[in-house]
Length: 287
Image 1 (cartoon, rainbow, N blue to C red):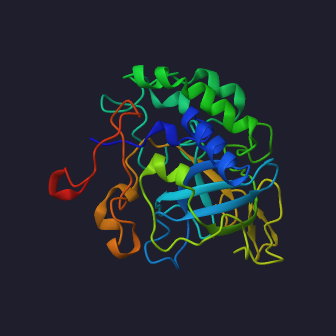
Image 2: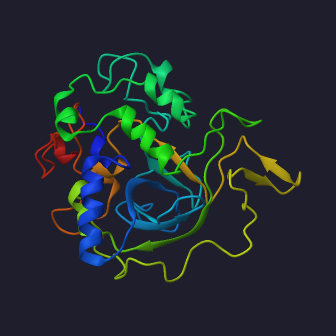
């Protein structure tokens, strides 16, 4: 059974090292991440593509690679992997013997949105059931969860009227950019049709889009108000389901759009760090 890699999580030691290497090489000071970008116009639903995001309240731009897809991710919404960001529809993080982490689901917060406040991070299990690799990397789930709040990539709804994980930062601008080599090294997925620049030259977000609220609630035009029960375009949402992503299945990608040898995401074993060899060594090549 394959799992998502924990060092893809925003703020992991591997991500910090990759960000520093990219900054030294390019002069670009950004955060790195992975997740799902909701886009219908891309020939493989964004898989393998990188997007640069300018997010309300976040001190740096984020360059994130879309390695997954999801029916619950709206158009032009980015669902970013962060510590206990919500186990979503396909939880493999907790709750049974094959889960990555020990314990029940209760400490993980809302199914969509996860822990709804930094204080809740301390109740999480610190390490997977197979803990040695995460400890050796210098990471912990508690620390990764706290980092997501420290970097303002998630908004707590605990003290807001709607509450219950429905609040998210607003994406002020977004565009597809070249995937940095340092990020590709962690995912082993790369498109052959990448743009040639890391900067936003022409953003995808239209001017005057109604979602200008910092909490990124969905705008209900008919009722002329904000609806916290819906997920909106141009929101930075969060997830962490620990499950092998869509980009790990060769049937989900088109070989002609991928760099040879980097066609699918290199997933992890149950410790979240040990890479699985996906060079067509799996059952029916569905690595």
